[in-house]
Length: 186
Length: 395
Image (tube, rainbow over all chains, first blue to last red; front, side, top):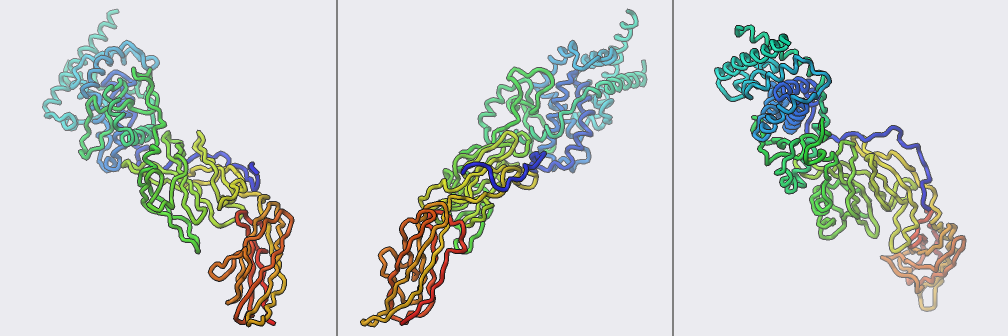
């Protein structure tokens, strides 16, 4: 008596499993991710010089944000938390070692189509900055963080940040100016 | 170059770089983060030891595990607390030295944990005359059995399937709740909670018991899961008890899926066809006249004919409820709290059998006798003609 007989209705067409509602409250997370990822990834790229790594770092930071989203969503600026995590990840001891090596290696590799000469120049110039100065420059110019905010994130005095920015600007101007001059000389 | 000129220069350069790079940013997506977090929770819970060992060999693509501590200040773990893969989607570029990232089909709850864990069990159906003794609520299982009296247990091993297509696998468990000589079968899905516990996602199917409507399954033969998250169940229209041939039940594959709020049938038949493996018993009885005997007793003979109109050989049992004081002297009958229960010879399909029940009493025998016939094992395809009433006369 085996066999599928009886009242056989058509199978539910186009059925697809629905997502389980998780205990984790993720309300608003997708919107937050969509609004913040690109800007943060750009900052991390400029800081590390590695587009793949920037993607990974920011994605990881968002994963951590999701793990504590119910608390984070109440923060005034959740993006600041994610950015700080992403930079901390980039600065962690083993990551820093890897980043330093990869930073130089990546300069010889095209990760995206057709990097402009200006971008190559800028990234090469940034690579020559000490980490702290590079971080301060990125946070200030790309993250729109004030000196005070950078000082808070970095856990240093405001004067220290000012010093980093001053030295970083000077070094970048020199490197970029030299690159431009060399380019013009050719 | 003044400080202001440097500021303008650096700002302009970085803005240009940012604008150019922004077009090459490819967010992996919030759902990828959800999958990663979920996978890590599972891994932390079910494979912490193994994971810890693997983490020491942190691949270059790895990063620290999520920090779930109470400190709101974000921190970064050291190299010994990294996961094999930061995200559970392929990274851009070649995989690291440890190979491709971990598969998104993270391990489900191990079978041993389910069979020896405390599981949330939904209430069982109620049946008026036979209250269930199966546990509900948070029920502790030991080797797949619940409680000391073992009214509730797991059938077979749990299956794992990704019911909601998110890359993680849930566990499909077949529970059996014993009721008399058969019982309820239930297919239920369990999943991890955020804190590593076990939660009841929902019931896929609970069979009916002592009910035969030709629609609801009364037996579960087999459970399968599919790659697309569906649960296929080979169901039967009734569960044969008492040593009968289990194959008297029919088979049907019905398919179920998760719709966001519960499990619904999404394929296969909704009802059973007529089951030809059934008896169709009906009794007829002649008049019953109790005659006063010289010793003062009353004696009479009740002739009962049982016809089997079904297509299956029957093993009929007569259930005879007599007026108070009347007893049967027939050898094949036994008193059952007043009524007599009499086993009859087998009746082939389409055949009949007749028995004479010798009855005695010392009291006035007037009243009604009710004779009901049923099969010892097989279902009766027509249960509204199984009873006949006889008026008992005295002379």
